[in-house]
Image (cartoon, rainbow, N blue to C red; front, side):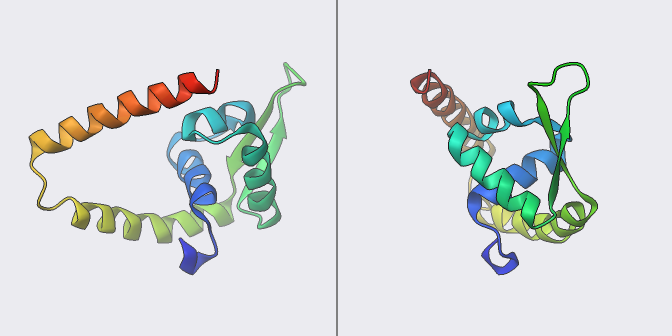
Length: 118
């Protein structure tokens, strides 16, 4: 990430948009566990780098969508395979049972963290 001028929060936002498509900005922070002010800051930075774009919702003016741009998609096409390879390498010695336990623990922790913000 750093090699490409991204911090972890910027990468998480781009990864979400890369894999899940256009998202309401109001939901992005909740999905990657970022505070609302931090989400706005990260989105502003990514927009200034031309890696994402905002789009006003036609049905509800209070809703603004963020989507990855062609430049952002090209960057993620280059970065994400490298990221996935590093993650796979880190978990090479971990059994499937251990991975499933880790996934469940992370989900539980994420849900608790989300509830703390309420």
